[in-house]
Amino acid sequence: MKAHQSEEERFLESYDASQFARPSVAVDVAIVTVHRGCLAVVLVQRVKQPAKGHWALPGGFVGIEESLDGAASRVLASKTGLQDIYLEQLYTFGAPDRDPRTRVISVGYFALVDHARLLKAMDALAHDETVRLARIDVPWPGEKPEQAHGPVVTQWQDEDLGLAFDHTDQLALLVQRLRGKIDYGALSFQLLPERFTLRQLQDVHEAILARPLNKDSFRRRMLASKLMAPTGDREEGVVHRPAELYRFIR
Amino acid sequence: MKAHQSEEERFLESYDASQFARPSVAVDVAIVTVHRGCLAVVLVQRVKQPAKGHWALPGGFVGIEESLDGAASRVLASKTGLQDIYLEQLYTFGAPDRDPRTRVISVGYFALVDHARLLKAMDALAHDETVRLARIDVPWPGEKPEQAHGPVVTQWQDEDLGLAFDHTDQLALLVQRLRGKIDYGALSFQLLPERFTLRQLQDVHEAILARPLNKDSFRRRMLASKLMAPTGDREEGVVHRPAELYRFIR
DNA sequence: ATAATAGTGTCTCTCAGACACTATACC
DNA sequence: GGTATAGTGTCTGAGAGACACTATTAT
Image (cartoon, rainbow over the protein chains, first blue to last red):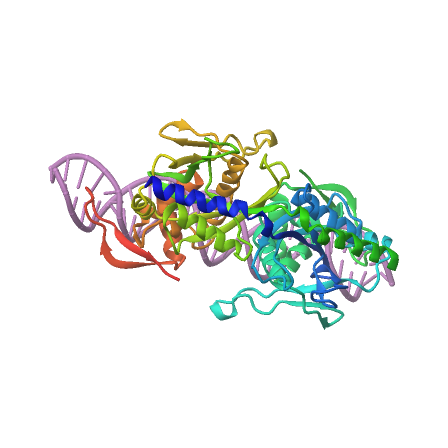
């Protein structure tokens, strides 16, 4: 009884004492946007081992005095120059062999940003060929367990990029998370500019859900949600009747 | 252009090289059950600093060759003797000051287990007063932002136990997660024995959601979900008409 | 018989989906 | 006027909530 308890406490203490064998802790950040009806994510080409030459999500190790959110913000800013972007923790990946070199536990994050803002910020940094915005295609999980997630496609100009480490799994989990949360809250607005039309909002939803939505009921649901308000202005430069511009509130 | 890129790569390398300052990585496991219409969680009393004497979620450091899920399983088994229990990652907590002693990043997990099975397993270990099953009470977030989460109450026999570290925050997040996921999938069945009645299932839902549910539509929804099948048997030893026993499928 | 809960049948209300129609921009 | 999309009005069907009623057990 007491003997068991103290035995277990000794067990935990032995783990505490093994400070010589701490894992490294990193963050990986999936910087997500919607472009031409598709989800897209920022990828970087690895310039050193492991997985040199392969494409991967931007990442970095967590500083000893740095918060996890802070490390994710830093990685986001270093690749895009962006600040004050929606950032959310996705999942923590800790398989012992996920990094071939050494034990690395990676806390996955995702950032949501309007496409125009992302392009503008990345242009300002004059990024070269080691940074790409790749389209991602995550099929819906089928009914049968063997096609649980289906093949996740990550491609840029019709070229399929195989991702390093477990980053394909991270993207699959990310898109599932987006699909689950989009109906419930403020998530989709983060992928749009300050002022947007209902059609743009629907495009974002359709890109994430990867299926067409009913126009009428989508309008009703969005307007009833009270998460958006009309600005009174209308879009310009379109070849048809201009739509009302809305903005996200609260 | 290229200069910026290589400068950034050097920055990441400097983080990689700082292996002398890696944070410790731990798991905390909230072992959850439903008892008499309330959510309850296993707490342990800390026998050493920091927060000595305070109550906390069971936890332990992650071994250098151990997966995160494996560490959570180990902590679960060490406190309850239970194996093959539903276990899911909750969130990773990494505030630099969350542990007063040193930098500890903690991956939160939760386990769901039937109350009878939990009690039986813990009795077999003959646990003493340093382990308790405390009722947890998480109010719904109010409309106003200042009462975002409300006070989370963790009590045992009407005595409120203040938890160590950020474990109160972990429980608040956990209950939010349970509330969000319970309608969507197999989660609630994990809190029930192999065979259960619809009334028991509704009790679990009501405990998690902390509000009464409509009996008729709850029955319809559950039976239509095709996640459960009647066994043909009925409950025994009740003072009223016995209900059909169902089992979880797939 | 009485108490207490299990389980069924039915009505209504709400909301998503579908369709038809009108409105307004550029060509 | 033609074309393309924005935005509105209305019908319908599915499902949640509510209520009434019947069924079955122990005491």
